[in-house]
Image (cartoon, rainbow, N blue to C red; front, side, top):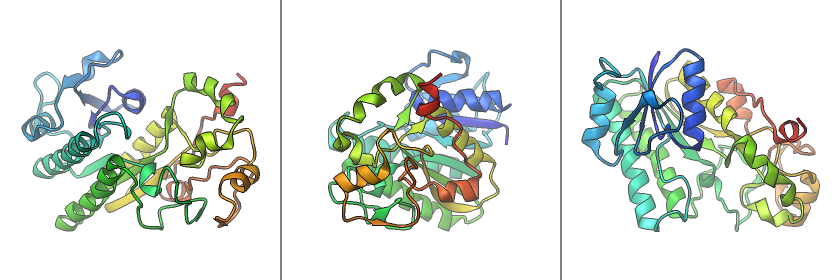
Length: 287
């Protein structure tokens, strides 16, 4: 696969994904409503809530693609709860994802990688997680309209796969996306363990998120798979033992939680995708 459409390629994660794919020899088109500040020549303005626009963009774009793309990376969405009214967030995100899944099916595009979310795990964990590290083994527990849409997108992918089991649909449950400039704020988190309890003190460096996307495009899998994608450590200098004792004292430990190891389990991504985070705020802030 060499021609890849990236929806939402102008966003925080999208920029890193587009850059990484280009650096690894992919022919990329960025489908977004907002023009990027870099690699502008790859940009085409598309409203993902308009099925006709999505299908047309995946089939061919004058001066960009001469036919259907080989794969789709779907990142375009309202990226978090609270940025728009609940119904707007839900309608935008679920409609956009349906349009991408269906347009890819009609265009005979065999692989779709899309952004699911860590929120399906039960964030903000007002009800404690069933165990730590959390993983993909328990049923989603959406607690917002944003997370509900993400949960339903995963189920929708399973039904699209049932219609054609030979296709590949990979959902990446990204943690909170960070760029190196964001790491300056991390020191302030240590003053209060509750500040980042809402996602078990997790994060994903945008560059490692891009690595996960590329590996999902290249891995030899069919059907539907979902993966938690987080960095290998937490955002905290305080130890996991201290954090969990303060915020989740009754939650079961399953395996070694380590001193600073991620509590958003990435073992499945490591095992099946070959994903291994290469960036850490601990190294970046010391550089």
